[in-house]
Amino acid sequence: MIENKMQIRELIKKGLVIIDKMGLFYTNTPAGNNTKELIKVIKSLFPLIQSQQPVISEVLAEATLRLNSNGIINAFNFGDVRTSLKVLKSIYCRPPKIFISHKSEDKPFVDALVDLLRLYIGSEADKIFCSSVPNYRIDLGKEIYSQIATQFADNDVFTIIVHSPRYYQSSVCLNEMGASWILNTDCCSFLTSDCDINKLNGVIDKRYISIKVNNEDAEERMNEFLCEVMDFFELPKLEFKAFSQWEKDRDKFLAIVNAIKY
Image 1 (cartoon, rainbow, N blue to C red):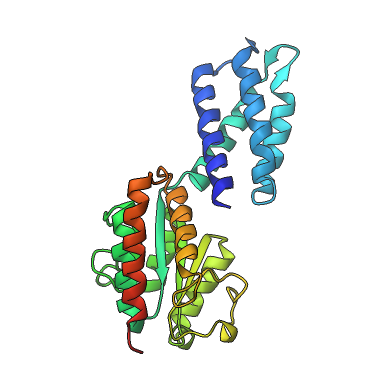
Image 2 (cartoon, rainbow, N blue to C red):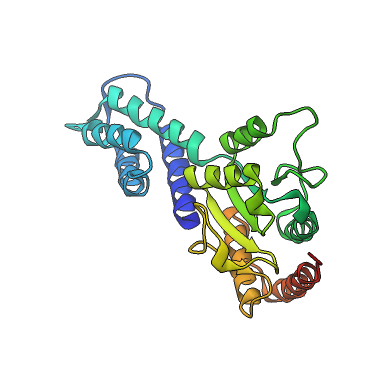
């Protein structure tokens, strides 16, 4: 899913760059190499967005089909392509942000996770949204649901759910999990050491679980998690030396969260 989003973003950006080169605002403009390249980009973009954006896809398909009319650019269809790409940009090219859904009682786990993430994506407040960690939490006096809705509307969200027995006792947490599922955000789940995978329920259940922190495969799963996060933020893959440091940071995180007493 992340890989598809990256492809979509690149194609949208490429298409808009081509359109800027064309600078078409009048009729009877001859179709040339830029027109051919734009049509090629749209045809590559179409299958990636068709299921998620059927209306825009239909407009793009029709406009692209009629864009080159006997060697002349159809200005009306050109406008449809340009507008569609700008709409897609507002959907897919929003800034990336991590949202950590968790129960407040699991703050020690989340503190350790945020400390780990900061090392690899940066510590800026616009990178993470988390209700219980200073600099990343809901503004004073703000209503929680409207604030979360704003975050999802303004950002491309990667949701991390910290599953625990406490999580399933909170209606707020269950609503957050449901929102992530409905909005089809990229998602990764952690299970606290006292959380039994077989007892999970809800829309994001044991089929979606990624990391049980006290399982034998936790280190391997953490490596996969890092790759997903780095790809989501379009950051370069770690070189050998940096990956060795990651292994130390990963193991420190796992030791901290597995030592938490519940």
